[in-house]
Amino acid sequence: MEYYLYIKSVHIIFVVSWMAGLFYIVRLFVYHIEANERPAEERALLQKQFQVMESKLWNIITVPAMLLTVASGIGMILVNPYLLQMNWMLVKIGFVAGLLIYHFICQRIIRQLKEGDFRWTSTQLRFWNEGATILLVAIVFTVVLKTAIDWLYGLAGLFVFIVVIMSAVKIYKYYRLKNSSNKV
Image 1 (cartoon, one colour):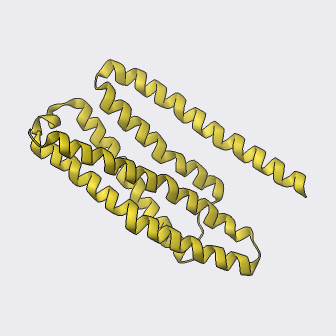
Image 2 (tube, rainbow, N blue to C red):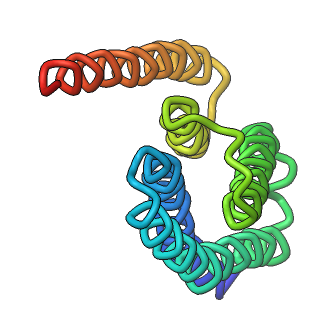
Image 3 (cartoon, rainbow, N blue to C red):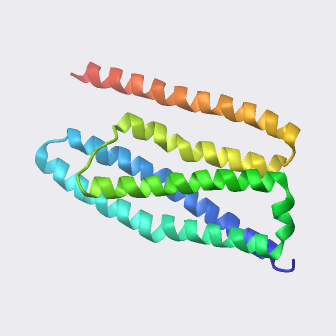
């Protein structure tokens, strides 16, 4: 137990770094996709630059932060195995598994974009960008609240949060399209 708080501190630091990487990588995907709307020469230049930025962000920040987040999380459990007897920790691990799936889907998107395979629209990616936010909110509420009654309120709040986020993306798209049609 002596080292638990040190490991927990490292865990929090790398969670912040991992989340920053996940938030920013999907924004880069959006810009990378939108570069397709540019003239050929500009498009080629932009897409090459976005590939470099995506690669550096992913390989230098996001993946190492994810690995250190998982390693320190496992370290906390090894130092304090009692955590696995708490229901909230099992729920948290479930949400973290969802975040890992999200991470690896982002990795696949990087590979697809590098190969010139544009399967996602910028709007789809804007919605996808909110996935990490939703999982982060779910994880934080689970860890902080810890009780089943509070989970019900937290789940209701998470649902409202999801609706608000998705509505904001739709409203942003509406105004973006409206403003771009006014410029023509």
